[in-house]
Image (cartoon, rainbow, N blue to C red; front, side):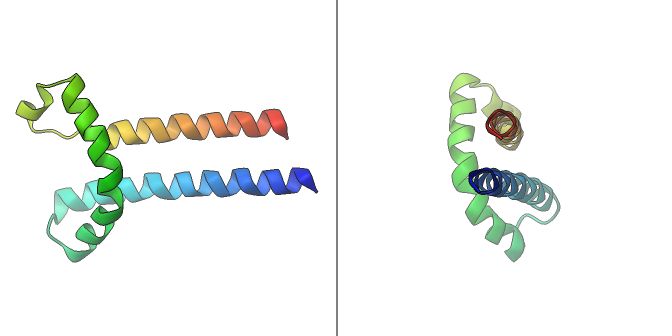
Length: 96
């Protein structure tokens, strides 16, 4: 019983992480193709609160990124989400 509950919780967390990574990927592609579309702006309302602290962190660590004009915060978010996903899967294997 406890194993099935833990398995459900881990799978739900991994599903949310997968949805978040796909949402960021869709937002990045849509922002490049159609930046002022209503769907891009709608997805941006959910994604930008996550990306903006990462963007500030990247600009503070690498100040020259502002001059380049390329935003690496989605890439950093994707790498962090993959790391968290890997850690959750590792924890799932250990506990179950």
